[in-house]
Length: 87
Image (cartoon, rainbow, N blue to C red; front, top):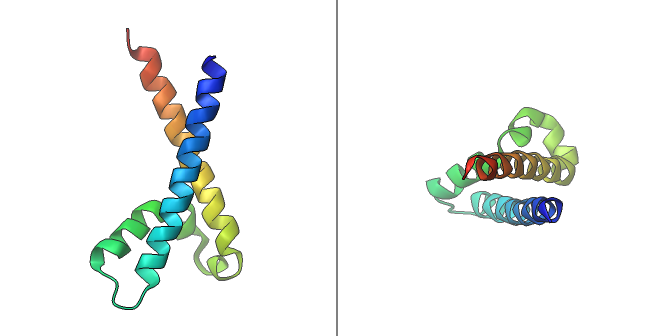
């Protein structure tokens, strides 16, 4: 059951981050976007989108999806670590 819970956590975080990241990108790219939209995009795009630089022009979907994979992996690990320490 623990393994199933980890998989569910991972998939939920991955999908939520992926959708949020693309919505933030669309809002930040829109004409007349606000500073908040750019800030949200910068936070969600960290770390891979920032590191990719000019490769983002050609591999945007791939890099952004891998970025969501990194976030989901890290947050799933953090949640399972937190869960183990609780009595």
